[in-house]
Length: 82
Image (cartoon, rainbow, N blue to C red; front, side, top):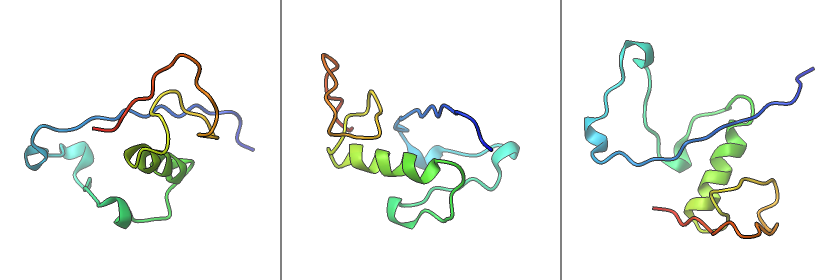
């Protein structure tokens, strides 16, 4: 049985994505369009990508994360996508 886990996600934008190059520790790394990510994904990664897609489309704040994006976030401002 798996116990409680915490997933931490960082969002960023490369100034020149064409210059990105994986080292030998990630030689098989690749970029995929959001609608063509190969699966199945492990753990909660499909949910994380779903939350990211919702953020890109303006349907949820980036911070804080919550299972229900309809929840109120108090004084924390909505963080808009790039």
